[in-house]
Amino acid sequence: MNNYRIIFYQTLIIIFSKQNIRATFFSFFLSLFLIVILLLCFWNLLPSISWMKVIFYGVYDYLFNLFWIFIITSSFIYLFPPISTLVSGFFLEKVVDNVNKRLGSYEDFKLDGDGYLSGIIAGVRILGFSTIVFILVMLFKWLFVSSIILSIILQFMASSLIIGREYYEIIAIKYFTAEESKRFKRKNYINIFIVGMFCNLFFLIPLLNLIAPIISTIFMTLRFNQLRLKNFNI
Image (tube, rainbow, N blue to C red; front, side, top):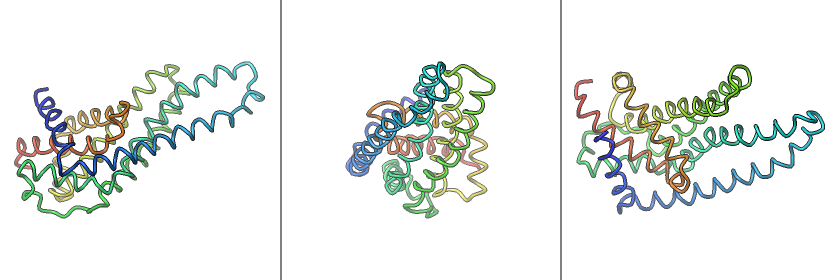
């Protein structure tokens, strides 16, 4: 855990450094706009489902409570990380470069990566995989498990795996070939998953989630460099 304490401390310093402050503020305002839009969509959805009362009669209130407790919570876990990553995608590779320059490891990153598209590609992939997870969790919830909490935990764990993998790819694509990246990922699967859980929490904590893509990118880059130095021979 000492490694993660060091990373948290470094992340707090780096995120408001001169090199990253613009990306941090852009991410903040874009994510704030995004959250307002999502909340308005959910708010406007509320009156539109009143027709359910006609169909379901007495069980309407029960279904309505399930909708708000499970569907809304689950939808936020499902939608916010990928969309927030998409809107901040143009800045993420620059953030990776700034972190590596600060660590003195920038020259080690010998590949060009996907440029500004890397963050956008990650957002699209997170959205695609999260959609599959969301559908599977919904089916699992209605067919096998009545516990809302268990269903949300399962979705959180699956989303963390996806987020960890895709944020890893943003950094790894600049350093490894595709085959080297796969080997490194297999070797450090648990570590990448743990970072993914931290990143997922960043997306869920109020206010912090407004700069979650930047925090997640810095956090993953710092952990990646720790693991890369520890596993020098891929």
